[in-house]
Image (cartoon, rainbow over the protein chains, first blue to last red):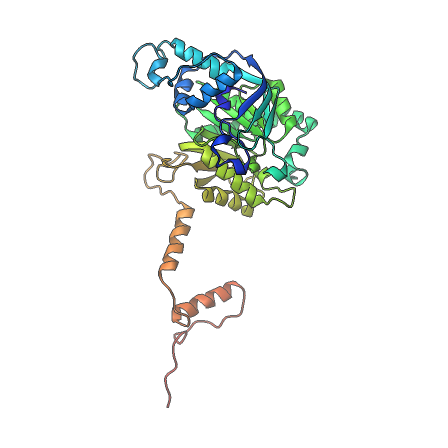
Length: 139
Length: 279
Protein backbone atom coordinates (compact mmCIF):
# COMPACT_ATOMS: atom_id res chain seq x y z
CA UNK A 1 0.00 0.00 0.00
CA UNK A 2 1.35 3.36 -1.04
CA UNK A 3 2.08 6.11 1.50
CA UNK A 4 -0.21 8.27 -0.63
CA UNK A 5 -3.11 5.89 0.05
CA UNK A 6 -2.38 5.93 3.76
CA UNK A 7 -2.77 9.70 3.67
CA UNK A 8 -6.41 9.23 2.62
CA UNK A 9 -7.40 6.29 4.80
CA UNK A 10 -9.50 6.60 7.91
CA UNK A 11 -11.13 4.20 10.33
CA UNK A 12 -14.06 2.36 8.76
CA UNK A 13 -16.18 2.23 11.91
CA UNK A 14 -19.33 4.30 11.95
CA UNK A 15 -18.61 5.57 15.47
CA UNK A 16 -15.22 6.92 14.39
CA UNK A 17 -16.55 8.82 11.36
CA UNK A 18 -17.16 11.98 13.38
CA UNK A 19 -13.96 11.80 15.44
CA UNK A 20 -10.89 13.81 14.44
CA UNK A 21 -8.62 11.05 15.80
CA UNK A 22 -9.84 8.55 13.19
CA UNK A 23 -7.53 10.20 10.66
CA UNK A 24 -4.69 9.52 10.13
CA UNK A 25 -4.32 5.86 11.00
CA UNK A 26 -1.09 5.06 12.82
CA UNK A 27 1.21 2.48 11.21
CA UNK A 28 2.74 -0.09 13.59
CA UNK A 29 5.45 -2.74 13.03
CA UNK A 30 5.59 -2.03 9.32
CA UNK A 31 7.87 -3.39 6.63
CA UNK A 32 8.47 -0.89 3.86
CA UNK A 33 9.46 -1.62 0.31
CA UNK A 34 10.39 0.59 -2.62
CA UNK A 35 8.43 -0.35 -5.72
CA UNK A 36 9.92 1.28 -8.80
CA UNK A 37 7.31 3.04 -10.93
CA UNK A 38 7.44 5.60 -13.70
CA UNK A 39 7.14 9.16 -12.53
CA UNK A 40 3.78 10.76 -13.37
CA UNK A 41 4.22 14.53 -12.89
CA UNK A 42 0.65 15.44 -13.87
CA UNK A 43 -0.80 13.02 -11.35
CA UNK A 44 1.40 14.38 -8.55
CA UNK A 45 0.33 17.88 -9.41
CA UNK A 46 -3.33 16.84 -9.46
CA UNK A 47 -3.15 15.05 -6.10
CA UNK A 48 -0.80 17.37 -4.18
CA UNK A 49 -3.42 19.93 -3.07
CA UNK A 50 -5.47 17.09 -1.56
CA UNK A 51 -2.61 15.65 0.52
CA UNK A 52 -2.84 16.50 4.24
CA UNK A 53 0.70 17.77 4.79
CA UNK A 54 0.60 17.74 8.60
CA UNK A 55 -0.60 14.13 8.63
CA UNK A 56 2.06 13.18 6.09
CA UNK A 57 4.81 14.76 8.23
CA UNK A 58 3.57 12.94 11.33
CA UNK A 59 3.45 9.70 9.38
CA UNK A 60 7.04 10.12 8.18
CA UNK A 61 8.05 10.62 11.81
CA UNK A 62 6.30 7.44 12.90
CA UNK A 63 7.81 5.45 10.05
CA UNK A 64 11.29 6.84 10.64
CA UNK A 65 11.53 8.33 7.17
CA UNK A 66 13.52 11.54 6.47
CA UNK A 67 11.91 14.69 7.85
CA UNK A 68 9.77 16.73 5.44
CA UNK A 69 9.76 20.50 5.08
CA UNK A 70 7.46 22.52 7.35
CA UNK A 71 5.33 23.88 4.56
CA UNK A 72 3.56 21.99 1.81
CA UNK A 73 5.26 22.53 -1.57
CA UNK A 74 3.02 24.29 -4.05
CA UNK A 75 2.33 23.16 -7.59
CA UNK A 76 4.80 25.70 -8.97
CA UNK A 77 7.65 24.02 -7.05
CA UNK A 78 7.22 20.85 -9.08
CA UNK A 79 8.46 22.07 -12.42
CA UNK A 80 11.71 23.85 -13.10
CA UNK A 81 10.47 26.04 -15.93
CA UNK A 82 7.84 28.58 -15.03
CA UNK A 83 5.12 27.04 -17.15
CA UNK A 84 1.56 27.89 -16.26
CA UNK A 85 -0.05 25.92 -19.06
CA UNK A 86 -1.93 23.13 -17.23
CA UNK A 87 -1.37 20.58 -20.01
CA UNK A 88 2.34 21.12 -20.52
CA UNK A 89 4.25 17.92 -19.82
CA UNK A 90 7.60 18.78 -21.33
CA UNK A 91 8.93 20.88 -18.45
CA UNK A 92 11.67 19.22 -16.43
CA UNK A 93 10.62 17.68 -13.04
CA UNK A 94 12.46 19.22 -10.08
CA UNK A 95 14.05 17.46 -7.12
CA UNK A 96 10.94 18.28 -5.06
CA UNK A 97 8.79 16.37 -7.52
CA UNK A 98 11.18 13.41 -7.54
CA UNK A 99 11.21 13.32 -3.73
CA UNK A 100 7.42 13.43 -3.58
CA UNK A 101 7.14 10.67 -6.16
CA UNK A 102 9.61 8.61 -4.21
CA UNK A 103 7.75 9.07 -0.93
CA UNK A 104 4.10 9.03 -2.01
CA UNK A 105 4.07 6.52 -4.87
CA UNK A 106 7.17 4.35 -4.63
CA UNK A 107 7.30 3.73 -0.89
CA UNK A 108 4.87 0.95 -0.04
CA UNK A 109 3.86 -0.75 3.18
CA UNK A 110 3.99 -4.51 2.66
CA UNK A 111 3.39 -5.92 6.16
CA UNK A 112 2.27 -4.52 9.47
CA UNK A 113 -0.87 -2.99 10.89
CA UNK A 114 -2.73 0.31 11.04
CA UNK A 115 -4.20 1.49 14.32
CA UNK A 116 -7.12 3.89 14.69
CA UNK A 117 -6.33 6.74 17.10
CA UNK A 118 -9.93 6.86 18.31
CA UNK A 119 -11.13 3.29 18.88
CA UNK A 120 -7.78 1.50 18.79
CA UNK A 121 -8.92 -1.03 16.21
CA UNK A 122 -6.04 -2.67 14.34
CA UNK A 123 -6.22 -3.23 10.61
CA UNK A 124 -3.75 -5.87 9.46
CA UNK A 125 -1.72 -5.43 6.27
CA UNK A 126 -0.47 -8.57 4.54
CA UNK A 127 1.41 -8.59 1.24
CA UNK A 128 0.41 -4.97 0.76
CA UNK A 129 -3.31 -5.66 1.16
CA UNK A 130 -5.02 -4.08 4.16
CA UNK A 131 -7.93 -5.91 5.73
CA UNK A 132 -10.77 -3.45 6.31
CA UNK A 133 -13.47 -6.06 6.86
CA UNK A 134 -15.21 -5.32 10.13
CA UNK A 135 -16.86 -8.00 12.24
CA UNK A 136 -20.61 -7.39 12.31
CA UNK A 137 -20.70 -6.18 15.94
CA UNK A 138 -18.29 -3.37 15.11
CA UNK A 139 -19.97 -2.02 11.98
CA UNK B 1 -28.94 -18.28 -16.63
CA UNK B 2 -28.54 -18.53 -12.89
CA UNK B 3 -27.34 -15.53 -10.97
CA UNK B 4 -24.26 -16.15 -8.79
CA UNK B 5 -25.66 -13.70 -6.20
CA UNK B 6 -28.45 -16.19 -5.47
CA UNK B 7 -26.07 -19.05 -4.79
CA UNK B 8 -23.59 -17.80 -2.17
CA UNK B 9 -22.28 -14.55 -0.66
CA UNK B 10 -19.47 -12.99 -2.74
CA UNK B 11 -16.60 -13.81 -0.38
CA UNK B 12 -17.55 -17.49 -0.50
CA UNK B 13 -18.67 -17.70 -4.12
CA UNK B 14 -15.40 -16.32 -5.48
CA UNK B 15 -13.16 -18.96 -3.95
CA UNK B 16 -9.78 -19.88 -5.43
CA UNK B 17 -11.17 -21.93 -8.30
CA UNK B 18 -13.98 -19.51 -9.22
CA UNK B 19 -11.60 -16.53 -9.07
CA UNK B 20 -9.08 -18.20 -11.35
CA UNK B 21 -11.85 -19.27 -13.74
CA UNK B 22 -13.30 -15.75 -13.77
CA UNK B 23 -9.98 -14.06 -14.46
CA UNK B 24 -8.72 -16.40 -17.16
CA UNK B 25 -11.99 -16.59 -19.12
CA UNK B 26 -11.36 -14.65 -22.31
CA UNK B 27 -15.10 -13.99 -22.68
CA UNK B 28 -15.30 -12.29 -19.28
CA UNK B 29 -12.05 -10.42 -19.92
CA UNK B 30 -13.50 -9.06 -23.16
CA UNK B 31 -16.82 -8.00 -21.61
CA UNK B 32 -15.12 -6.41 -18.59
CA UNK B 33 -12.70 -4.51 -20.82
CA UNK B 34 -15.43 -3.10 -23.04
CA UNK B 35 -17.51 -2.07 -20.01
CA UNK B 36 -14.52 -0.42 -18.37
CA UNK B 37 -13.76 1.55 -21.52
CA UNK B 38 -17.40 2.61 -21.69
CA UNK B 39 -17.30 3.69 -18.03
CA UNK B 40 -14.08 5.64 -18.64
CA UNK B 41 -15.75 7.45 -21.56
CA UNK B 42 -18.61 8.39 -19.26
CA UNK B 43 -16.24 9.61 -16.54
CA UNK B 44 -14.67 11.99 -19.04
CA UNK B 45 -11.39 12.43 -17.11
CA UNK B 46 -8.97 14.96 -18.51
CA UNK B 47 -6.03 14.58 -16.11
CA UNK B 48 -4.36 11.56 -14.54
CA UNK B 49 -6.68 10.95 -11.60
CA UNK B 50 -7.08 9.00 -8.39
CA UNK B 51 -9.88 6.50 -8.97
CA UNK B 52 -11.69 4.20 -6.56
CA UNK B 53 -12.58 0.79 -7.99
CA UNK B 54 -15.39 -0.81 -6.00
CA UNK B 55 -15.40 -4.57 -6.42
CA UNK B 56 -12.06 -4.53 -8.23
CA UNK B 57 -11.80 -8.34 -8.12
CA UNK B 58 -8.63 -9.53 -9.79
CA UNK B 59 -7.97 -6.07 -11.20
CA UNK B 60 -9.31 -6.64 -14.73
CA UNK B 61 -10.82 -3.15 -14.79
CA UNK B 62 -7.88 -1.68 -12.87
CA UNK B 63 -5.30 -2.77 -15.41
CA UNK B 64 -7.23 -0.81 -18.03
CA UNK B 65 -7.09 2.30 -15.81
CA UNK B 66 -3.33 1.83 -15.46
CA UNK B 67 -2.94 1.31 -19.20
CA UNK B 68 -4.48 4.68 -20.08
CA UNK B 69 -2.07 7.35 -21.32
CA UNK B 70 -1.23 9.09 -19.04
CA UNK B 71 -2.04 6.38 -16.49
CA UNK B 72 -4.59 6.84 -13.73
CA UNK B 73 -3.82 5.71 -10.20
CA UNK B 74 -6.44 3.50 -8.63
CA UNK B 75 -7.37 1.98 -5.29
CA UNK B 76 -9.44 -1.19 -5.33
CA UNK B 77 -11.87 -2.62 -2.78
CA UNK B 78 -13.06 -6.20 -2.88
CA UNK B 79 -14.64 -8.57 -0.41
CA UNK B 80 -13.19 -11.77 -1.88
CA UNK B 81 -9.71 -12.65 -0.60
CA UNK B 82 -9.24 -15.20 -3.40
CA UNK B 83 -9.92 -12.55 -6.05
CA UNK B 84 -7.34 -10.27 -4.43
CA UNK B 85 -4.85 -13.13 -4.37
CA UNK B 86 -5.28 -13.50 -8.12
CA UNK B 87 -4.79 -9.74 -8.43
CA UNK B 88 -1.51 -10.05 -6.48
CA UNK B 89 -0.34 -12.78 -8.83
CA UNK B 90 -1.20 -10.61 -11.83
CA UNK B 91 0.94 -7.87 -10.25
CA UNK B 92 -1.57 -5.03 -10.70
CA UNK B 93 -0.53 -1.43 -10.15
CA UNK B 94 -3.26 -0.28 -7.79
CA UNK B 95 -3.50 -0.58 -4.02
CA UNK B 96 -5.83 -3.34 -2.88
CA UNK B 97 -8.12 -3.52 0.13
CA UNK B 98 -10.09 -6.41 1.55
CA UNK B 99 -13.27 -4.57 2.43
CA UNK B 100 -17.04 -4.84 2.21
CA UNK B 101 -18.49 -1.87 0.32
CA UNK B 102 -21.73 -2.38 2.26
CA UNK B 103 -19.85 -1.33 5.41
CA UNK B 104 -18.97 2.04 3.93
CA UNK B 105 -15.94 3.50 2.17
CA UNK B 106 -13.01 4.05 4.60
CA UNK B 107 -11.52 7.17 3.00
CA UNK B 108 -11.55 10.74 4.17
CA UNK B 109 -13.84 13.26 2.43
CA UNK B 110 -12.84 14.56 -0.98
CA UNK B 111 -10.27 11.85 -1.72
CA UNK B 112 -11.13 10.64 -5.20
CA UNK B 113 -11.55 12.29 -8.59
CA UNK B 114 -13.79 9.49 -9.74
CA UNK B 115 -15.09 6.06 -8.88
CA UNK B 116 -15.78 3.07 -11.04
CA UNK B 117 -17.54 -0.19 -10.32
CA UNK B 118 -17.88 -2.99 -12.85
CA UNK B 119 -20.44 -5.75 -12.19
CA UNK B 120 -20.39 -5.41 -8.42
CA UNK B 121 -23.35 -3.44 -7.05
CA UNK B 122 -25.83 -6.30 -7.47
CA UNK B 123 -23.88 -8.17 -4.78
CA UNK B 124 -24.66 -5.37 -2.32
CA UNK B 125 -28.37 -6.14 -2.54
CA UNK B 126 -27.81 -9.58 -1.01
CA UNK B 127 -27.99 -9.84 2.72
CA UNK B 128 -26.63 -12.80 4.61
CA UNK B 129 -27.52 -11.98 8.22
CA UNK B 130 -30.62 -10.62 9.91
CA UNK B 131 -28.64 -7.73 11.43
CA UNK B 132 -28.40 -5.85 8.15
CA UNK B 133 -30.70 -5.01 5.27
CA UNK B 134 -30.05 -4.44 1.58
CA UNK B 135 -31.32 -0.88 1.91
CA UNK B 136 -29.01 -0.21 4.85
CA UNK B 137 -26.00 -1.62 3.05
CA UNK B 138 -26.73 0.44 -0.07
CA UNK B 139 -27.19 3.55 2.08
CA UNK B 140 -23.87 3.09 3.87
CA UNK B 141 -22.11 2.45 0.59
CA UNK B 142 -23.53 5.46 -1.28
CA UNK B 143 -23.15 7.80 1.73
CA UNK B 144 -19.50 6.77 2.03
CA UNK B 145 -18.92 7.06 -1.71
CA UNK B 146 -20.54 10.49 -1.85
CA UNK B 147 -18.31 11.78 0.93
CA UNK B 148 -15.11 10.31 -0.47
CA UNK B 149 -15.53 11.87 -3.92
CA UNK B 150 -14.38 15.42 -4.45
CA UNK B 151 -16.81 18.11 -5.61
CA UNK B 152 -17.46 17.80 -9.33
CA UNK B 153 -16.36 14.16 -9.23
CA UNK B 154 -18.20 11.39 -11.01
CA UNK B 155 -18.88 7.75 -10.43
CA UNK B 156 -19.95 5.19 -13.00
CA UNK B 157 -21.29 1.90 -11.69
CA UNK B 158 -22.12 -0.87 -14.13
CA UNK B 159 -24.28 -3.53 -12.54
CA UNK B 160 -26.68 -6.33 -13.39
CA UNK B 161 -29.98 -5.59 -11.68
CA UNK B 162 -32.06 -8.67 -11.03
CA UNK B 163 -35.28 -6.85 -11.88
CA UNK B 164 -36.84 -3.41 -12.14
CA UNK B 165 -37.34 -3.26 -8.38
CA UNK B 166 -33.67 -3.82 -7.64
CA UNK B 167 -32.63 -1.30 -10.28
CA UNK B 168 -34.94 1.28 -8.72
CA UNK B 169 -33.70 0.47 -5.22
CA UNK B 170 -30.06 1.04 -6.19
CA UNK B 171 -30.66 4.30 -8.04
CA UNK B 172 -32.98 5.59 -5.29
CA UNK B 173 -30.31 4.87 -2.67
CA UNK B 174 -27.80 6.88 -4.73
CA UNK B 175 -30.18 9.81 -5.09
CA UNK B 176 -30.92 9.78 -1.36
CA UNK B 177 -27.17 9.98 -0.63
CA UNK B 178 -27.11 13.25 -2.56
CA UNK B 179 -25.85 12.16 -5.97
CA UNK B 180 -27.17 13.44 -9.22
CA UNK B 181 -28.03 10.08 -10.78
CA UNK B 182 -28.87 8.87 -14.23
CA UNK B 183 -29.34 5.35 -15.56
CA UNK B 184 -27.91 4.50 -18.94
CA UNK B 185 -28.77 1.20 -20.56
CA UNK B 186 -26.77 -0.11 -23.53
CA UNK B 187 -28.38 -2.68 -25.84
CA UNK B 188 -31.67 -2.41 -24.00
CA UNK B 189 -34.03 -5.32 -24.36
CA UNK B 190 -31.34 -7.76 -25.47
CA UNK B 191 -29.75 -10.49 -23.39
CA UNK B 192 -26.53 -8.46 -23.22
CA UNK B 193 -28.14 -5.32 -21.79
CA UNK B 194 -25.71 -3.33 -19.67
CA UNK B 195 -26.95 -0.96 -16.99
CA UNK B 196 -24.72 1.96 -16.01
CA UNK B 197 -25.55 4.16 -13.06
CA UNK B 198 -23.89 7.51 -13.70
CA UNK B 199 -23.49 9.58 -10.52
CA UNK B 200 -22.33 13.17 -10.17
CA UNK B 201 -21.32 15.09 -7.06
CA UNK B 202 -22.06 18.78 -6.80
CA UNK B 203 -21.53 20.91 -9.87
CA UNK B 204 -21.31 18.09 -12.37
CA UNK B 205 -22.31 19.50 -15.73
CA UNK B 206 -24.69 17.07 -17.37
CA UNK B 207 -25.06 19.00 -20.64
CA UNK B 208 -28.78 19.33 -20.04
CA UNK B 209 -29.33 15.69 -19.14
CA UNK B 210 -27.37 14.23 -22.04
CA UNK B 211 -24.46 12.49 -20.35
CA UNK B 212 -23.35 10.30 -23.22
CA UNK B 213 -22.89 13.18 -25.63
CA UNK B 214 -24.49 11.03 -28.34
CA UNK B 215 -27.00 13.67 -29.35
CA UNK B 216 -24.79 16.70 -28.77
CA UNK B 217 -24.84 18.92 -31.81
CA UNK B 218 -27.90 17.24 -33.27
CA UNK B 219 -30.95 19.34 -33.97
CA UNK B 220 -34.51 18.54 -33.09
CA UNK B 221 -33.56 16.09 -30.34
CA UNK B 222 -35.01 16.33 -26.86
CA UNK B 223 -33.46 14.51 -23.95
CA UNK B 224 -36.29 12.79 -22.13
CA UNK B 225 -35.49 12.76 -18.43
CA UNK B 226 -38.11 10.54 -16.86
CA UNK B 227 -37.12 11.57 -13.33
CA UNK B 228 -37.77 15.22 -14.01
CA UNK B 229 -41.10 14.40 -15.66
CA UNK B 230 -42.15 12.35 -12.64
CA UNK B 231 -41.13 15.17 -10.33
CA UNK B 232 -43.12 17.67 -12.37
CA UNK B 233 -46.17 15.46 -12.22
CA UNK B 234 -45.91 15.15 -8.46
CA UNK B 235 -45.66 18.87 -8.04
CA UNK B 236 -48.70 19.62 -10.20
CA UNK B 237 -50.70 17.07 -8.26
CA UNK B 238 -49.72 18.54 -4.96
CA UNK B 239 -50.57 22.06 -6.14
CA UNK B 240 -54.30 21.43 -6.73
CA UNK B 241 -56.04 20.07 -3.66
CA UNK B 242 -59.22 18.32 -4.65
CA UNK B 243 -62.14 18.58 -2.28
CA UNK B 244 -63.54 15.27 -1.23
CA UNK B 245 -66.79 14.68 -3.08
CA UNK B 246 -66.03 17.18 -5.86
CA UNK B 247 -66.35 16.17 -9.50
CA UNK B 248 -62.58 15.92 -10.00
CA UNK B 249 -62.26 13.75 -6.90
CA UNK B 250 -65.04 11.40 -8.07
CA UNK B 251 -63.51 11.08 -11.55
CA UNK B 252 -60.10 10.28 -10.05
CA UNK B 253 -61.54 7.65 -7.73
CA UNK B 254 -63.48 6.08 -10.61
CA UNK B 255 -60.28 5.91 -12.66
CA UNK B 256 -58.45 4.32 -9.76
CA UNK B 257 -61.17 1.71 -9.25
CA UNK B 258 -61.27 0.95 -12.97
CA UNK B 259 -57.49 0.48 -12.97
CA UNK B 260 -57.90 -1.97 -10.12
CA UNK B 261 -60.29 -3.97 -12.26
CA UNK B 262 -63.49 -3.10 -10.35
CA UNK B 263 -66.80 -2.65 -12.16
CA UNK B 264 -67.32 1.10 -12.54
CA UNK B 265 -70.44 2.80 -13.94
CA UNK B 266 -69.72 4.68 -17.20
CA UNK B 267 -69.35 8.45 -16.99
CA UNK B 268 -72.24 10.58 -18.17
CA UNK B 269 -73.13 14.25 -18.05
CA UNK B 270 -74.76 13.60 -14.65
CA UNK B 271 -71.55 12.20 -13.08
CA UNK B 272 -70.54 14.18 -10.02
CA UNK B 273 -73.56 16.50 -10.27
CA UNK B 274 -76.09 17.30 -7.53
CA UNK B 275 -79.74 16.34 -8.00
CA UNK B 276 -82.29 19.05 -8.52
CA UNK B 277 -84.48 19.72 -5.55
CA UNK B 278 -87.82 18.31 -6.70
CA UNK B 279 -90.05 19.71 -4.00
